[in-house]
Amino acid sequence: MNVLVLMGSPRLHGNTAELCKPMMEEMTARGAQVRYVTLADKAIAPCRGCYACQDVQGEYGCVQCDDMHAIVGDVIWSDLIVLATPIYSWYCAAPMKNLLDRHYGLNKYYGSAEGSLWAGRRVAILATHGYEGDYATGPFETGMRRLCEHSGLIYAGLYSVQDEDNLASFQTLEAVSGAKAFAAGLLAQS
Ligand SMILES: Cc1cc2nc3c(=O)[nH]c(=O)nc-3n(C[C@H](O)[C@H](O)[C@H](O)COP(=O)(O)O)c2cc1C
Image (cartoon, rainbow, N blue to C red):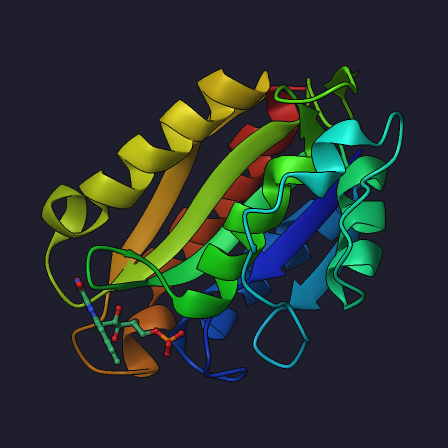
């Protein structure tokens, strides 16, 4: 299975990156091909809402020339996309929000082009957050469930850990074994 981990924290070596490690270790140990892409160090401009992509058949078609085109190649390669993000203001952090808005060219719903470049992929969430559990992650998870419905993707679930003590919170046996069990469950679903 091809797994694309999109890591959206502005902190490239922060809590969310730390929690990705055991998840990816387990995926690799179970034979998955894993690509890890950090977003904060990439050029991903906000969507301009120009709809030009909606008239380009069979290709992403975004007129903005930035790193999103390479990431779209990774998305198309993948069977499973893991959105790894800290919760910022009850949603994902800004680098991931830009990426999510730029999904438009993958769905040809609003112009002369037709079809989808990514339907059928599975999407999971790995989140870290300051508030407790579902209170922190609920709005983002709801958004991603709806994006999956809208885009013909399969929502595959969420694993999250609360930030109580910075990096140490994500290095506990509970956090590490939870991330590994999440990885195993995602691979078993395929
Ligand atoms: C600007 C900012 C906004 C945040 N907003 C929330 C929030 O809405 N809900 C929450 O539970 N935690 C919030 N947090 C806490 C982070 O989600 C948490 O510390 C996370 O583990 C940081 O991960 P990182 O080190 O990968 O960036 C916020 C932190 C920052 C810096």
